[in-house]
Length: 182
Image: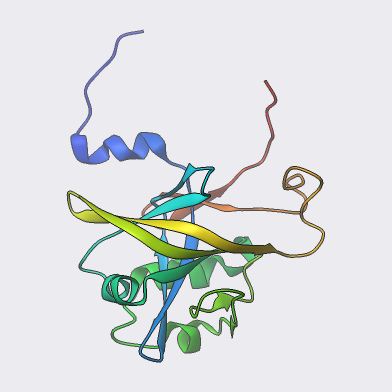
């Protein structure tokens, strides 16, 4: 098969669909939600994940100053709210109030979990690395929770129980439909 070059800015589309998360942070009594699609686990010991955030985002300074956050995993039931949080700034509004999403206490961090999300990963910030227009926030997982009944002994159960949103670019999201076993 012949290979053809594509625009460098569109190169990241090759990696879509990427998991979509709603990251919550709290600083000086104010909480915010930011939609993140640049996210990945990076280590087992200690359990560590990265999120990528632009310094232009309102949540950026909150994350730097609070040094903790929650990665909330939404399902398609709150797609409109998820997309809204990615397109509007918390500098101008209270996203919890505007979307109707519910803030509930987390186990180990001050940032709230989003009750309507089915899973939550609480993180303490351990390092930040600049990469171009964004910075990588490396967080150690200090607590995690999921809606009861969604885990078997090792893995999240099939697509009938858990439907994660995957960002496809623009205003498009996808759902994984089929498990493939090697």
